[in-house]
Length: 266
Image (cartoon, rainbow, N blue to C red; front, side):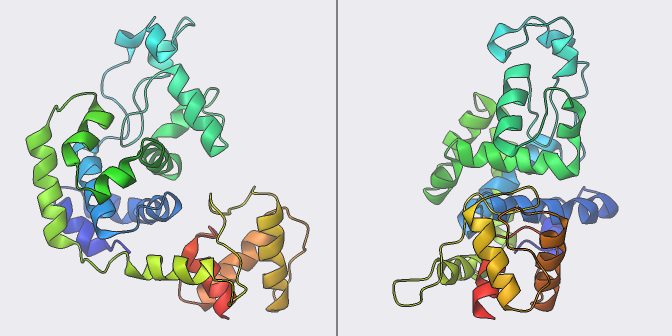
């Protein structure tokens, strides 16, 4: 998993306080959107470093007025240009994109566009964009220029992006993703193990369904005080965090491969 020291070396101009504040949310996005191998992490972090100015910018400096009336961005209502200006570490722009990514993430970005610039949401948008546009697969093939074109629409800033990419590859350990991958494999189970597949997308507060019910039953079997109702509410969230803390995992309440594996390894 990405460490503070690795992030410091990749983005040396990022203020320490900001870096440490953002790190848990970057880590969460890496896990949620399967950016969990050496090649995926290095490509993602390089692009993030360039696009955000080493995490300095979570909102476009311009007013957004230049986007007014841009039908290709879905800006059909008066004021949409400024309202849906670029936000987040990859600069989500335009009403249509705010609607699309809000729907994918279960967030109302159309009526609350400014939350796209927050650490809690911005890195999830970046991760969702990365996965949705096939950038994990391109990173596996080291097609960095193609990744740049899908993010930028061209190759603007390519030398700077490559500089960060080379730096990230020197800094990151090729084993950084191994624990997550191993956990995912363990959680996936087999016909012999009887362990259920880790749900995708990962479970978090607000999730509902059979995956939640299966997790709740496992938590209950392990002695946690949780209702088995298929609704990932505050009580389930508290039980998940307690389980993560017990197993030395990041206590974010998100049930990804590591937490899922820990549940069935207990």
